[in-house]
Length: 155
Image 1 (cartoon, one colour):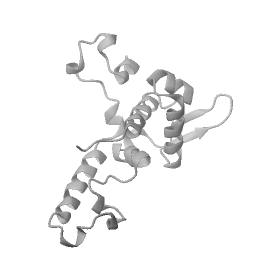
Image 2 (cartoon, helix red, strand yellow; image 1 turned 135 degrees about the vertical axis):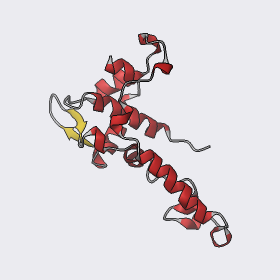
Image 3 (cartoon, one colour; image 1 turned 180 degrees about the vertical axis):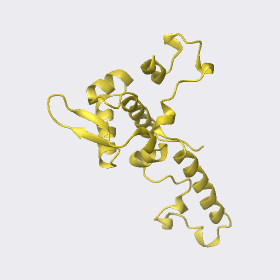
Image 4 (tube, one colour; image 1 turned 90 degrees about the horizontal axis):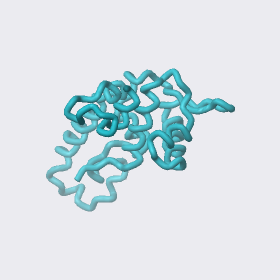
């Protein structure tokens, strides 16, 4: 199973919340309360996003976080890699290939590079701005209880 970490998933959710109101300065506490992600986790992820250059930190009484770039310039790959590191489907694709004792006689390694790039490119083709577009009808009947978090922010 190919699976993102919970932190990467939370990172995308937090970035979407911020991108929906890019002119606002968002506090960690506000985002934690709204998303119901624990405050220490929110703080950790937001700090990671600042170090990756995706968010700007504002100090002071009304401090918080804003996007460093427009949402149309931030890809899902940017967010995932900020939290989890490089998109890497197998151990032999990273810098430390010594983790695999089959590298010298593996017949599929070259194809894994192609597959890995396809996945990375697919994630890179989805922008943060795409993630906050209106929610498709098939996600519920439109009542507030059926709406995903992002739809509640939009409406």
